[in-house]
Image: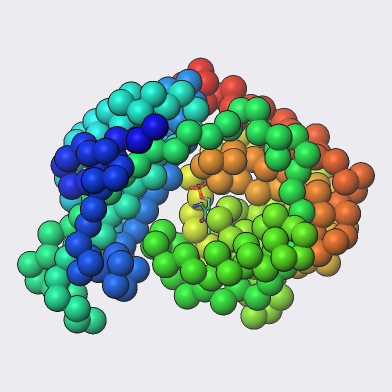
Length: 283
Ligand code: PMP
């Protein structure tokens, strides 16, 4: 069944959804994106995602393609038209099409493309079991706080993880500390029950789910420490997990083939995941 895709104001069947070969998103990865989850037909965390979209656009001097009302209206229409009960909306804004030149063109019109993907988020078998990760050097560019579509290194890292029998990679800065996962923020729970995750900076994406999960942790009386941690500390942790819009809180059960605690998803991770889902469904 063909989806309806949004392309610059038009709702078209996916086979007809096309952009210019001169689009700078295609030529230079000159664009940014957001992923918003959908539960029971309702978009989650739209305010956080729209705010971060504006931040990414501002950092790159790309104009907003439309008003926030138009953007949210189009996202809701796509969800409804495609009958998405559970899944996500992917949206991408690029600087637009112009003859190829490194300098930003003066007159390019930003381009906005959106599509939906159906996905089981609540009963995700991967979340029941947890994932295995490996660590790899973080070879991405240094402005990871901007959510650009330049995702080739994360693709390479995921392929390397797969080749080694794992599902994902945690990336390491030059000092050997974990920055984040290829497409998620990374956490450990220490022996004394502290939740540790790297502090916000240009080194990581400022996850929208991260913000909510840390707020939930604090509300539940858990102690949160925002600081870098090493793989060695992670191997010895009580629990490890990741967060992202489409996976909520995802247990990590092994790191570089070191089994974390019992090798089963941890209690803290489960509690945070369940509470995040409960709050999302009741919002
Ligand atoms: N870090 C990276 C590198 C990501 O790609 C993502 C998800 N796109 C995240 C963290 C998680 O961010 P969010 O919770 O906003 O999905």
